[in-house]
Amino acid sequence: MSSVCVFTASSPGTNPAYRDAAWALGATLARERVRLVYGGARVGLMGELADSVRAHDGEVVGVMPRNLVDWEVAHEGLSELRVVTSMHERKAQMSELADAFAALPGGLGTLEELFEVWTWSQLGLHAKPVALLDPGGFWQPLLGFLDGMVSERLLRREDRERIVVADDPDTLLDRLRTAEPATVSGKWLDNGPAHARAPGLEA
Ligand SMILES: C/C(=C\CNc1ncnc2c1ncn2[C@@H]1O[C@H](COP(=O)(O)O)[C@@H](O)[C@H]1O)CO
Image (cartoon, rainbow, N blue to C red; front, side, top):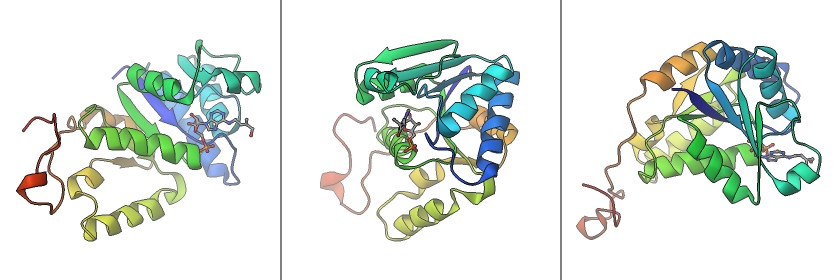
């Protein structure tokens, strides 16, 4: 695994444990020579993470749409900043550049990016592992909500359990490295044979 794409907040938040987690993850990525791919901002936890990787001599690629660069939120100290035309192109490039995905605490943008790569995995569009770094149990309410979806048979247990959760960056990297490639059954829950397989998915 040579590259991890990380989604996290463009705001700093109020909990210092999240900044500490961003710095710890940055130091671990740099030490392990794993390239960081992220949204390219200098603000919030995104900026803390990139600052940490660079401070520890690691490699960082940022991918940012032109309008955000014009808003002057781009990080100017990255190994590479790719300027793209849209948020869609940004996500496509971030996803192509990475061998795995991870999320630190964040807001709507972080959730949107996390759920997109998790959904693509559910659909078999990639087989890359997806992880949560969970300082202070930030992700636990969301995981509880998703467990409720499993109980209500709206989410397959194997798709819920596919997410890797870790309390510290070393464990996170270990688990990403050893995660089984995601596989797809192609079966929708409870819809019977007529809906048993998504078009184009392998048996
Ligand atoms: C213009 C201002 C802040 C800049 N906002 C963003 N800069 C860079 N990347 C962003 C920004 N907002 C969303 N993203 C992407 O989503 C994730 C962070 O979103 P969140 O809502 O803060 O969790 C992050 O991974 C980015 O890729 C001033 O208001």
